[in-house]
Length: 169
Image (tube, rainbow, N blue to C red; front, side, top):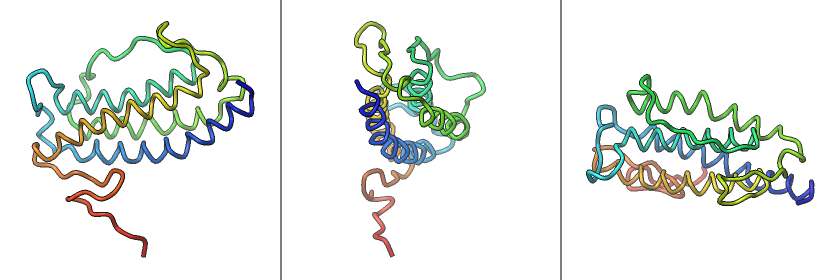
């Protein structure tokens, strides 16, 4: 990969990433207070576990891209994260600074080959796409929990029954 190609991919992925992070935050914030233990099936993660996985994975991918190394992580929900509001506060505190760090990577850092646990090895910048796909997948799962928990589904890629699309004024 050439420097210009790495920079092009960053410039393509970043606006989408910033939009997706804002949407993910809306879904995390829509988890009704007191309903974090909800799970649609005994084999499913609880709403809190899924919200934490979604939030912490976004940070983990960005951190791994910045470091140029993927390390095993996620040991479950930290003891100080007890509510969906705690997850949102953590996400707000941790993810935007990591986006800024990714924005400031050099072309060399963006194009360096990074192994994903020996399963694939891609230029660091390409993992932004995997992050986006992973986030969209788990955000879809969490959004499907919202109504059964008594919550409202925010607009994601268009309006929802709970948050209709608003055309520009």
